[in-house]
Length: 149
Image (cartoon, rainbow, N blue to C red):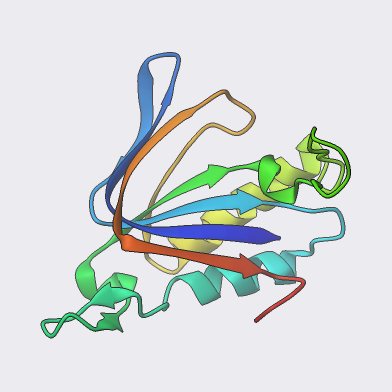
C-alpha cells in the first residue's frame, strides 16, 4: 500500500458537481492498494499516519500530531500512485490492486482511522473526482508500505 499525505488547511472531493467529502484543517491522504497488501499492512499504515508530528506548534516547528490540532482526514483512493512510468510515455497501472480488492483495502484503511477516533471524509472509490485542497506548508509525505524509509 502506498500513501501520499498532504497537510491541508481545507480540502474537498467532488463528483459530478456534488461535494461528497470535505474537511477543515487536517490531512488529505491519497491511498493506493497493491496486490498482496494484507490487512496488517493497511492497519500499520493507518496507525502510522495518525500520530505523524507534522503540524506546527506555537514556535512554528512541526511538532504536533493530528489529534493535537483536532484535525480531520480526507481519504481518497488513487490507483495512479502505482504507476509504472520508466518505459515509454504512457504509464501503466498493473501494479494497482484489482478494483474489488482495492475497495476492500481502502474501506479497511478508513475503518481503521475511524476506529482510532479520527473524523474521516472520503472521496468515492473509482469515481472521476475533483479534489481541491490548500496544501499547508506545503507538507507532503510519501509512505510506501513495501519500502519504508
